[in-house]
Length: 277
Image 1 (tube, rainbow, N blue to C red):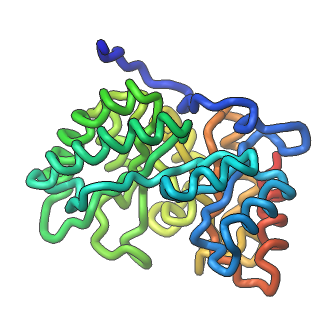
Image 2 (image 1 turned 120 degrees about the vertical axis):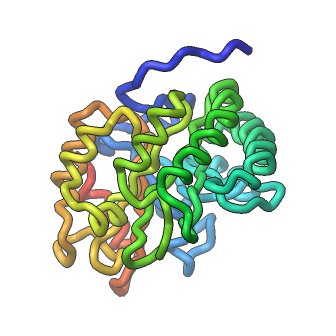
């Protein structure tokens, strides 16, 4: 298939049906939740509660989990690609294995109507940011045609290297955006994790507005501690949610906080209400 030319888009465009659309009462953002944060609940329990609350999907899940999620009328909003073990994206010697893995995995995701799959940059380990960016761009350019053909967005995650992920390379929005611009595909975007970028940069709303064309997915989490997004932490998630919705964002907004309160489901309900704008 001939590869399409790229012009920056206002948002990624998942190719899902009615289950993915924010319904009346859900606000303008399509909210989901990351499975790993609710380890004391089975996937079925989490799906049932998420559906009741008004969430549209479950985030950070593998192919074996997708059918259970879809059974509840929910979307696997961020999938993982399984297959051959590879090293970090920012190492040239890993490129062939990574490309092969994603080419196969994107077909699986497309067949299951999974809109996004995650990818990570890897750590610096003495490599310069410039060399790492060059290597990530080269590999992602090879993955991009498969992502475009599949209609699935590959999302490179921004993580903090100050607290949780020491030495991680894709730790500033400017580095990630440079990579996105050079790859030049509507199906390769950034996963903007608000918790991580609050630690590294702050100035969340301005940064999102300035770089919106290159963001395909969002994660939440309260700083410090990656706990509830209520008034115990420093970010104003009501304001952040409203700013993202005002941009016309039509992708997914996934909660990735670790509940510290006595009732994790009530914490999830509260997060949904805060971000229902």
